[in-house]
Length: 439
Ligand SMILES: Cc1cc2nc3c(=O)[nH]c(=O)nc-3n(C[C@H](O)[C@H](O)[C@H](O)COP(=O)(O)OP(=O)(O)OC[C@H]3O[C@@H](n4cnc5c(N)ncnc54)[C@H](O)[C@@H]3O)c2cc1C
Image 1 (tube, rainbow, N blue to C red):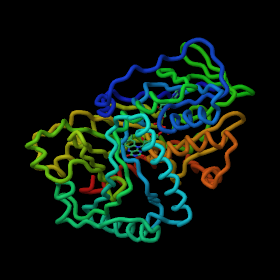
Image 2: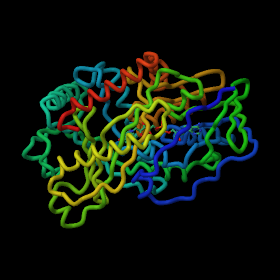
Image 3: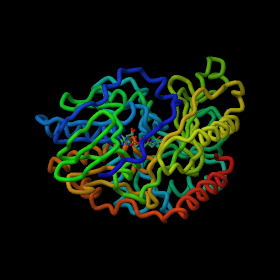
Image 4: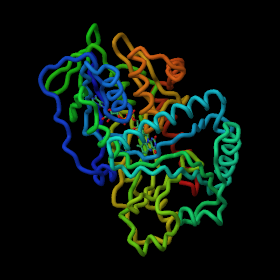
């Protein structure tokens, strides 16, 4: 029997969650149940896997189990970029091997298309805007990154536009950045509104149990899952709970539960919007991976995302949250000096599952246990597509994309503790310091 020692415990201050339409969470499970398919984790990956399994096996029931409420976990806490383009931070031109980059692009586009189609089909109100993204730089290091990425995009044959300092305020209001690389394919969303809408439009043969943290698991011919109010017996278990997959006994010492943090301002009034200028909504990611992501939302709030912490238990820590609030205020003031009276109304954190080689896991973990885990900070599109393809593979489907995911070596091992914590914390501090004004 495996005791699940790490359970998700996110903070209460996620702006997306509070600002998205409220819904009635599905009741938690109690008593005994058994099913052929049981999925643990109802983020982008689990929601996509449940939907596709239900479509592939219309006469079978799929149980989807979530520890918290849908929209409250990381899938509802991110910056809302459904990104199309690959960005391999280990390669000189951020594209690297061209065949791998093409397949990654295909996967991301498939994830994006699935989400766009579901939003359209079910009328999900999630502020979806196909408005592209700016990748912007302030420091010389960042300018060099944009230049290298431009060469990579040429190699991949992808459209982009370089925008210089003088022109940037007409796009994003602020004159803070020296240069940006605009790519048109990214779609922006309100993530909590999207996952809530996905949960409420699941096929009829999916039963979603929210607020049901699995606390014990027994592997065998059937997998027995236990929680505070009962147990569930599964013929096949599918793990889509990202770094928490480690507490189920898989990929131990291969994923890193790293938290990152975001804030949303109060809405800008008409006069503040005029003072800011630029387009009515946009999204910007930093050239330096340790820099700051910024968005102007369609409801006229500004989002700031930066700061990282290593939380080995995958749970929120109030000390790190307080530090992020202070950093976000500074980052906001540097970029928006024309908006001195605008407060940050919400600040929250969320767990990423990162691996040292930036690869995720897809496939069979043990007899009767499967997983799509470790989205490496790109789970909106990647989680969606890997969840769907895992369900297709379980239905016996074959494709080049499935082969590509199955053949991936997956996350590589981390060094042991205490070297791991020392190394990760030193890397995070150094990266954040080196980001300079881009933070
Ligand atoms: C601030 C921030 C900004 C980000 N920005 C972006 C972005 O712009 N674009 C992008 O693509 N990605 C972004 N990410 C990353 C993205 O949110 C993740 O990659 C994505 O959420 C992964 O989806 P998932 O479904 O695989 O896992 P998760 O969203 O982590 O879902 C896993 C679920 O499993 C549940 N669970 C865990 N253990 C148990 C258990 N024992 N029992 C039952 N349920 C359990 C959890 O409660 C959770 O809801 C960001 C993340 C953060 C924190």
